[in-house]
Image (cartoon, rainbow, N blue to C red):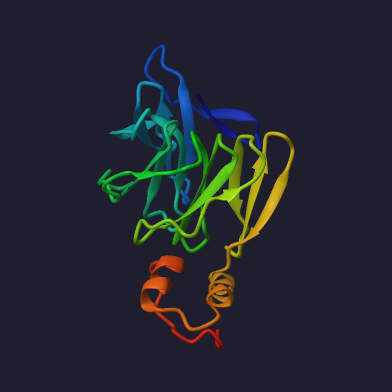
Length: 215
């Protein structure tokens, strides 16, 4: 593995994974100062850029890191594995923030994306679906977003209101994931004000607003 200066098309660093071990996933922190990469022996290494100094190593959940993602605010590193386990860590200390590890229904997780405000994490995987997670509570948000039975990757748009899922068969789907839209749908299904428990189930981590007629 190596770091490249895109303007000059030249290497600027040579971070080394352990000899004979393949790299399974990589992710940069938002400020570009930290690089995380997973290796097939099940570890995730965090390195300071550009001096190639490895800060520390982490044990990835499950079968090792198949996908990595930093939150846009830089406070969270998400690690996902080929057996569907997802774990959140503090990238400064390595401390685990999600106990127990979340278990996605997307098969082997191959892609993750945080919403721009860092409050929602999307996972996507080999089973052709994506799952939304409320980062603060660790709760799943609604059912999986399913598409063709083909490996999927996912990404939020800059507003955080739309999630794109792309599939190995060439299909691309756009999903409205705006919390205001979720509330409208939930109210429409219920046909009345939502109870506090229903609100918590549909919109975890968000202040309860019982009226279905206002934004």
